[in-house]
Each structure stands twice: as structure tokens, then as C-alpha cells.
Length: 481
Ligand SMILES: *[C@@H]1O[C@H](CO)[C@@H](O)[C@H](O)[C@H]1NC(C)=O
Ligand SMILES: *[C@@H]1O[C@H](CO)[C@@H](O)[C@H](O)[C@H]1NC(C)=O
Ligand SMILES: *[C@@H]1O[C@H](CO)[C@@H](O)[C@H](O)[C@H]1NC(C)=O
Ligand SMILES: *[C@@H]1O[C@H](CO)[C@@H](O)[C@H](O)[C@H]1NC(C)=O
Image (cartoon, rainbow, N blue to C red; front, side, top):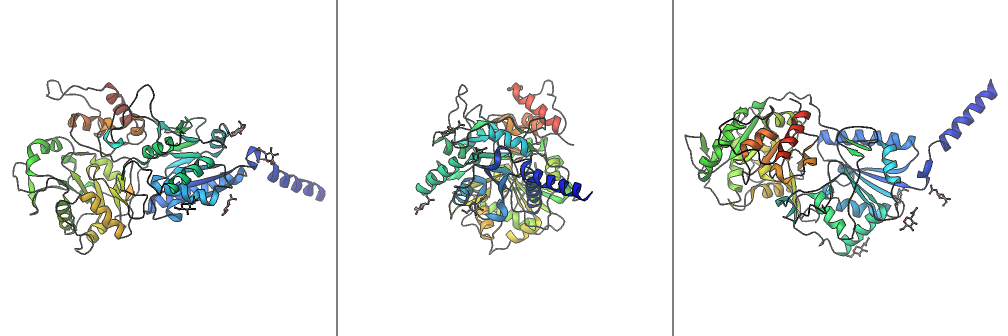
């Protein structure tokens, strides 16, 4: 009996030492969870880290896990570059792979190691869920598109995988150039911009089909769609503030009236003049050609006086938005926390004097406590009425030490400016600009919760892009409401 136990214990020890060390005995993987500094995101990241630790220990994988919001809170980790420099200096000599993980993925480590093992980690390897543009787009600085030789860039929701030699190479290049390698001062689509940087050392993204929107055998990373959250939130709790001006009333306001404005039970259209036809209100700020800082700050100060709201959503008069989906998303956040949410862009974000901001056209959402704070004259005072409002709010938030929270469901551009693959998996919340598209049709296809059927005899242009309709159908299939 006693000896059997001893033998059994020896067996267990042997298993613990030998069972799973496979080919990974010499390799070491650095994971970085690219989360964001706000409660629900940090909770998700902690959960992901512990799940990953558990799997890595079972497989006896040499590894190190960083949570970006804890480790490097004030650098633009979302552009990848600041993270690479840091990982290269502490793990450039003792790791084989660096995995930068999107915050909402589920990791299946055995499958992920299989993916890594299929590549030679001594070489310069860049892996991700590859997507490509089907036409030139403003968000990629109108870079030319060659359909026969598409330029692949990763779906940022999953993150990216880099061999350590590539991390070291990029970090050194970035450091040597003093950070001047970026083509533009603006950080718009970090995954795309990063891919052009990687291409400058002659490396292209290798697409892996193991990064999956929907789980199936062989998936290494699976995207987890946001589920309905428990906070009680009614649409009336969100004040929708539409920025307009007299010049656009006739052209744009009927479109939002025909589409989403009716769903926004608590809204106002702020303009330079009172127009009874559309029920606009004026806050006494003259219109400016561009910028709108004065108008936006006036809206924020006005909203601070509204006692029965929990959130303020500031949108343009040419923003299309799903009120229901926004309500559902906001129910995942605490309106008592400082939250600024939308689509994150950056201005020189990788430098010490740069900052992140919410790009205005996609819609900027602020919790009421943040609205109250931004309304203080000393906190955020426009240099001039025509300073760009969204960028200036980014500067204010940075001065306050507050992060800008990104959701991939907000879009500064039109549906056709994004590869279809990026619109899969999660129902979009906003799109922007009525330029060279039919906004009513785009709203019905992408944002309305009941399927689109064109009205016979209406003046609307026909569905011009058949893939657009197919894609919208996919969105409805995964829609929740
Ligand atoms: C690990 O390193 C040892 C000694 O350097 C070598 O003999 C072995 O083949 C390596 N294993 C793998 C899986 O690379
Ligand atoms: C790699 O080296 C750094 C110091 O250079 C150390 O902090 C880190 O723990 C090491 N990581 C592993 C996985 O050995
Ligand atoms: C991996 O790449 C290195 C560097 O290019 C090369 O020396 C080595 O032979 C390759 N290993 C395999 C197994 O192909
Ligand atoms: C980065 O560049 C600075 C000079 O700009 C240099 O002193 C430093 O050694 C470089 N570091 C690395 C890791 O290349």
C-alpha cells in the first residue's frame, strides 16, 4: 500500500515534469493584452490573463503575460509601437514569439502554439487575421489599391503575432529613426499603419485562418462578442446632441429624421439658428466653417445642466447611428465613472507630446460625471470657436489624465470604406458622411434592426453594391435585438 503510493507519487512528479513540455522547452512566448483603462475592459483583461496563465502552466510553456493598462497605462499601446520597444528591451534576448492580444479574444493555447510552430521563429514573421481594402479610402490616406496584389493588414480586434527577431528589428528601426518612420502625424487605423511600417522592412502580413469570428475546430483565437450587460439603461437616459448649422438643415436633417432620430427619445439639434421646421435650438455660438470647438463646448455645458441624463452622445448631422445598439453598449459601462467612448484616433500618439482623441463624425459619448467635469470653464477652454472640437477634447482628456475608450463598432467613414471582414462579428453602431452613398439605404442595411426592403417607386438609388447587401445580411444574422 505504502510503496504503491510512493510509486504513484513518483509517477505524478514524472508526469508533471515530462508530460507536456513538447517542443516549447526552448521557446518562450510574451503575451501582451491590449486592454483599455476602464472597469469592464480591465476586468475582461484580468480574466483573459488568468485563463491564459492556467493553459500556459498546463502546457508548461515558458511565458510572460503583460496587461497593457497596468504595465504601460500612458503610452499609446494601441498603436503597438510603444509596446514593441518595451518588449524588445526586456525580452528581445529571451523570447521567441510576441503575441499582442486584442482585449476581447478567447485564447486556445494548444491551437495557437500549433500556428506558431508552423513558422520559423528565427525569421521575420508577422501573423494576423488578414483583411484588405477593395477600394482607396480616406482612412488609409487614399493609398492605391491593387486588387491583384492586395495589401494585407490585420483585424485589430484579434491582435497580432510577431517573431521576436521582427520585434527587435522594428524596435531598433523605430528608435534609430527617432520615431520619424510614421507616414502621417495622424494615427487613424493603427493596424493598417503598423502594417506599412512592417512592410518598410520587407515583411508582409501572413494571414492565419485560425483567428476566428465564429468558433470551429482549429481556432486559436476566437472573438467574443459583447453580451448584454446588466446595468439598467433606457434610451431616455442618453441625451443625443446633434451638431448642425443653418446651411445644412434642409439637406441633412430630413435624413436623420427619416432614420434614427425618432429612436432617440431624448435629443436636441443644436444649430446657429432656431429653425421651427426642424426644431433646432441655438446656444448662441456663431457657426464656423470647420472646427466647432465653441459649439461643442456649449453643448457640453448645456448638457451638464440636464439633470435626468446618464450619458451624452454628440454626433454630426451627417452621422448615422443605431440608438438601440448604443444603449445596449452603454449598459456595460458605469455612468458614475469617467468614460469617453467612440472611435479612437491619435495625433502623434506615439510621441510624448501626442494624444488620443475620439473622432467626431463617428459620435463621441461621455458619461454624465465626465460631462460635468468637462463643463468647468477651467478644465477645457477652446482656444477659438473653430478649433477642431474632437482633437481639442482629446487634449483636455489627456490633461485630466483620462483615457479615450475605443469601440470598433463606431466608424468615422462610410460602410464601403471598410473591408467586409471588419464589419463581421459585431453589429456596427455608427457610420459617417453622406458623400457618394445613399444614407437612408446605408442606415437600413447596416444600422436598422429590421431587414431592409427597398420601397417600390421611392427616389432612393438602387442598391449599387450587391456585396453591401450580402454583408448587411450577415450583420442582421448576428444581430441581437
Ligand atoms: C532545445 O535545446 C536543446 C539544447 O540546446 C536541443 O538539443 C533541443 O533539440 C532543443 N529542442 C527544441 C524543441 O528545439
Ligand atoms: C527575460 O529577461 C528579462 C530581463 O532582461 C527578465 O525580466 C524576464 O523575466 C526574462 N523573461 C523570461 C521569460 O525569462
Ligand atoms: C529557420 O530560419 C533560420 C534563419 O533564416 C535558418 O538558419 C534555419 O535553418 C531555419 N530553420 C528551419 C527549421 O527551417
Ligand atoms: C535608441 O536610440 C538612442 C539614441 O537616440 C540610443 O542611445 C539607444 O542606445 C538606442 N536604443 C536601442 C535599444 O537601440
